[in-house]
Image (tube, rainbow, N blue to C red; front, side, top):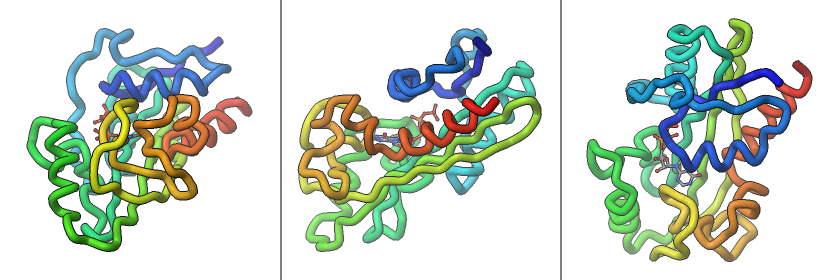
Length: 191
Ligand code: ITT
């Protein structure tokens, strides 16, 4: 089985994706003894995904992919968007981020939003992108304690539970990351 490196410092993402990938051995940047943070300086999730993957591909010459994701809220002009991790403060803080979203949406009728993911895969020197998104609404308070990030305040369209109230299996059936990851896997299956 070939190795493929998932370039992420977020353990939750690894747990989500390793349940989906069967035909490659998923390794992490920790397995490469790489612990630095790759700064996400681009202004699109696609740009940041490329930045993370190309950094590791060039440094270690290993096939790899990364994802950049964000929560895009219509009434906030697409914020927090590409700045989702550091919306409220320079050091990523999930609770502060959620508080700021709830504050900024106070009294707002349009609570529609979407989680979006862009995966950048660099394999054998070629770059490929896979995207996924899921529409939903932002709740007025936290619901549930599973998942990570903004999961407690996001209810996907057609559902009545937040991502944080769902099991990982249920979130993985519909999430932005699983949609993009399934496209990645279909591609890798043909390799
Ligand atoms: P990387 O090391 O992979 O970059 P990260 O946590 O910084 O990990 P991203 O930049 O891709 O991840 O995502 C930005 C933020 O968007 C992340 O910190 C969460 O707050 C939020 N987010 C992304 N995917 C999410 C999900 O499935 N559920 C809830 N929040 C999510």
